[in-house]
Image 1 (tube, one colour):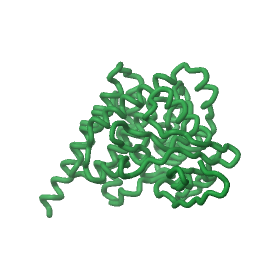
Image 2: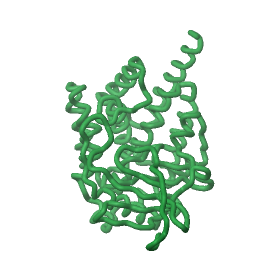
Image 3: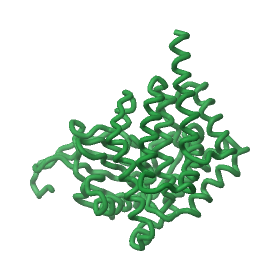
Image 4: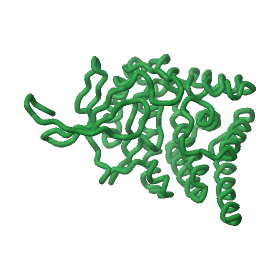
Length: 324
């Protein structure tokens, strides 16, 4: 770290709406410094406690005891200032997964390892009294996820009030694991040997199915964004799903994940954090219709959703090519 009199420089890093993130260049090399914001950088008013940076630090420390390569090393943490300093992972060696998906690039070895890693972290946290004591912050997860995603979608879909509210109840009744809470391709780096999970400020006691569905939703939405790669994304989704359940199937957990996934699809259209890369009104309508179908008639598993979703977007891409 820096000493008195050292020259320090840096630059802001892009990505994310909830924090200021900087690369800080120290004499010993660059580090990453992050400060949580009280008001998130989205169009609607969305406020969240800044002490969530403490849970990110705690998540990294917990994960390092289970899978040392899965999270960045914590170099410093100042709770009073709301600042977390971690190792800096260079884009020359670590690619943001979202960027690879944008280009239709799928590294199945990394995707499978990601699913396995998530399951290991979930399993290690279950019935862990220290985890429960540290991360049981229901107000935080409600402010960051349950309200802005599920409940914020109700005004645009008042006939689904019961279904969306039920997702919140389902989460609360099954909060037995440490979850990341924002398990998204924008928060995952693919390095030379192992995926690295970032931005764990939503970490909380919750339902493991939530993380599984959150990540799966992004793969679903990438098919609507880049339909020419839809079947490739299906392969990635099933690889992630299958590796997660490789050590043991859990029908109840998977059924909950399928319900959350439908809710997330609707929330990314009508909640407080609408996905920025879906702009076509027709595509938005198709996503809403799919989500509404499976909110009112829940699927029994994730494969059922995948078998319908990805081929439809692939066909959509083929039709566009014929028309052109």
